[in-house]
Image 1 (cartoon, one colour):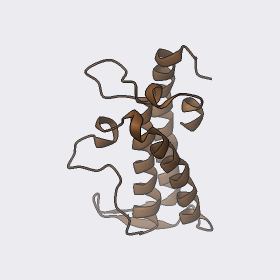
Image 2 (tube, rainbow, N blue to C red):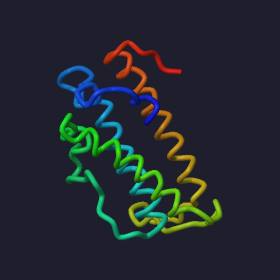
Image 3 (cartoon, rainbow, N blue to C red):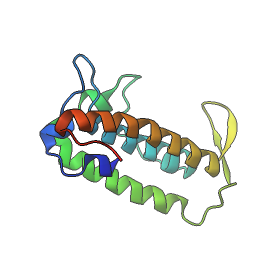
Image 4 (cartoon, helix red, strand yellow):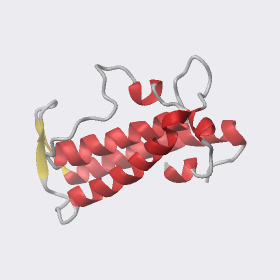
Length: 139
């Protein structure tokens, strides 16, 4: 995700795909920051840290993405990735935790596979958004 967004201005990162959609590269950055945090640190690691952009089923990660927050939001994803790496360091992929919302044990391996799927899905969105913003094609 960071590679897809490299070299863009805050305004370009916050540019919406097509009105009335709230989809933007910055929204994807904010979304992935919250997803990283919720799976690796909150659910797996049991850390008591707040969700960053959660607001009763709405989309503040996308709705509130503005050029004014772009630099801090980008830095938050970089930081969150490092914190998540630390939260999982030394743990076995078969280690499990109780996912309270679904009521079953989930392995760290499952979380990694889920995150690969999540990034793959949103990397496709990011390719289209980046091409619209500056004509760059994904690789």
